[in-house]
Length: 228
Length: 228
DNA sequence: TGAATAGTGTCTATCAGACATTATATT
DNA sequence: AATATAATGTCTGATAGACACTATTCA
Image 1: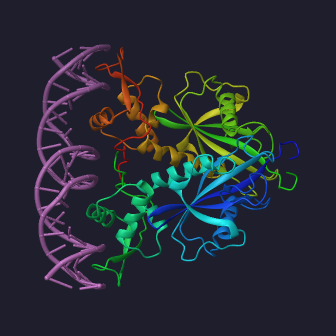
Image 2 (image 1 turned 60 degrees about the vertical axis):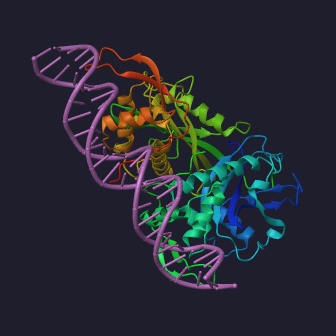
Image 3 (image 1 turned 120 degrees about the vertical axis):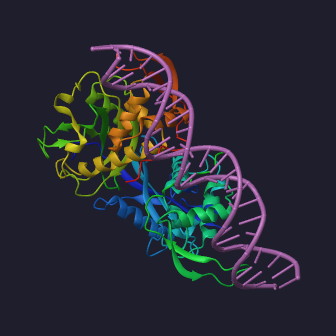
């Protein structure tokens, strides 16, 4: 193994959630050089005996302060331009996490400086390293996956209403969807959602039925974005 | 950098092509331990100053003997289980390549032992390392991408007929598609293909119009796989 | 002329989008 | 009662699947 060039390997996380009708991204302010004081994706080095998904889950739980990572976690892509990190040759495996809005604000061991930032407030060049591009790729992946998979429910608590699910689509896509057609579509797509049997109470208006995630892993037919 | 665990980083390639109405995968027979003599994906170590896409293109051209990588190349995913390589901690960035059937057989510098293998002849456990899983992921990615992108044309030469394109879909998906509906769909989807203005000659039957790849990057509406 | 392949047309069930209507809660 | 939200129903145009038919070549 000494024959081969030595790399450092990190994981970085694009953690998205929907809160207050805006798509939010979890960012940390870097406390050490390089790029000290700038916003960056949460992440860190992979242990020499640690599997990549384990490293991603570890960073996610550390940064969010949640014992169990609810929601969804998938590999996004690997970024390894030779000059992307001034410390040397660092290849990062980026992960995309979709989480329900957390009841408690972020408070983990490393998360003193972690914050949810609305994605439409991000400006190019604002993030450290090549994290701008990683975030852009993560957003596009999330938007595309909502079309063909039931992953929108990963943004919701275990039980949710059709209106909540619709708000996820509208927020992630930045579009408006007809509530009646959306309701028909969601309840008519096999395995998308399963009735929980209960209903909401205490709100204005007629109570809404609660649903859980259904067994489907892909949507047939897909929920296509409205064309511009 | 000496503080961080040292990894080796490789690229591995899932190279697919359609020939003789069967989906083929490019494999090499390993000439050195570990797993000497077994089939494996083409690939190799990334240079310490080499970008990841450059390493993938380099391996692809070396193994296929083609100066320009026609077709399509995209990152597939990164695999880094601690025990996946007995030589030590090796993380591999896998790439998916879709190529037109090569006029000349594979003949590159390292490619003395490279061969096209029909994918339905692969048996579990046949490949070295964790390459079984990487191939499975690559196949699923290719099958899924044919639904929502015009990438099927990456399997075709620069000019192709609708029937050739249909053969790609049928081969990759392992299904039969109605030639008439397929023709209507392909020519009716904006930007999927552009007429080349010429036609085939010398075959049996009516000559077919030739097309080139269109400008679209995604298909609207998608070409959905028939449900089983 | 017959065989083979390319391409067009037609019919029908299904689906998406637009929008009216009914249902059930709070204030 | 007025208002707000949930859920269902109706209509229309577009699309997918099934399949008849026409077009153009070679043998």
